[in-house]
Image: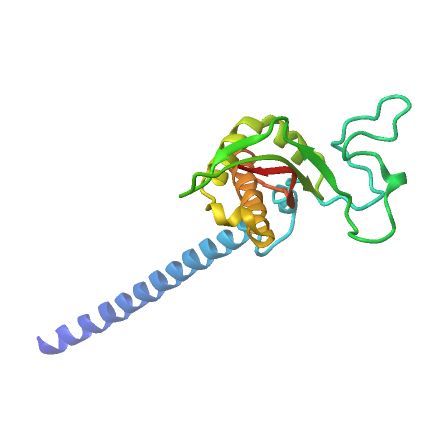
Length: 201
């Protein structure tokens, strides 16, 4: 009887090992196939037509002399609108990119943080990107104005009395505008803020 049990046990053992090998191979194929699919879906490997899906649709930098596809058409007798089409007036030096400007329609008046001082500023900003940034500034001017007033009100009075403090304020204002645009449109694009007037009382 013991011989019979040994003979019966050996084939079952081989069959169990074979099933384990087949199961392990199937698991490896599933994991490998899933990993390969994930890499292709993420665009890390493979090619095909997936490149078009990941195209950067954010506003592009516009070189001097390059036509801005989003700029408004120039009226008859003009050489291009604000930020668009004025390639014949671009200088040779300085930045390689065209600069488009946007002026906020009204002044900003605010108290300053921990101070009795009042500041009144007129602001403009610029971008080297295509005209969509200017269009977004126009579209979201109300939200941007609100955020800028909050940033100005959070400025200590001593900051507006020095050139260095005003430069820091300009940087904070750029970040504020880009934050609003990023939340609203998915991209900022403003490079600088300028003080057209700056009155402290």
